[in-house]
Amino acid sequence: IRDQPRSRGLGDVYKRQSKYDINQIKLQKFARSLAKQKLSTPLDRKKFLYSIMNDKHVKELLKDGKYKTAETKVKKMLR
Image (cartoon, rainbow, N blue to C red; front, top):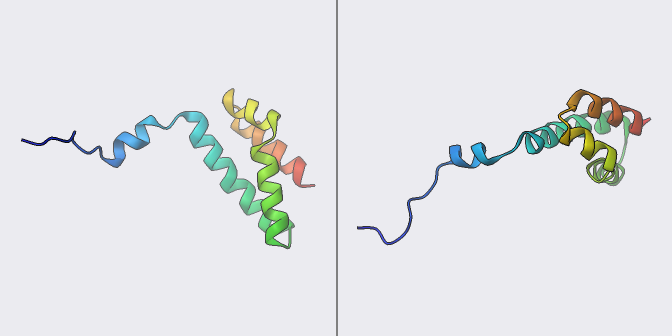
């Protein structure tokens, strides 16, 4: 008999991730790729990525499930 509850597998972790979380991760990957093409220093890329993830409009777009619109916003922010 075990005293501790059964360990959960990774599947349970992934099931708990919301669509918002998944889209945020996808958007970060997309933004990082764009930033590497346009921004020369790691510090500039880091600042850019932080600005995206803290942008209220981007957060709203992701909450509303408008991932493609969020991508467009990221492209505009990088110009």
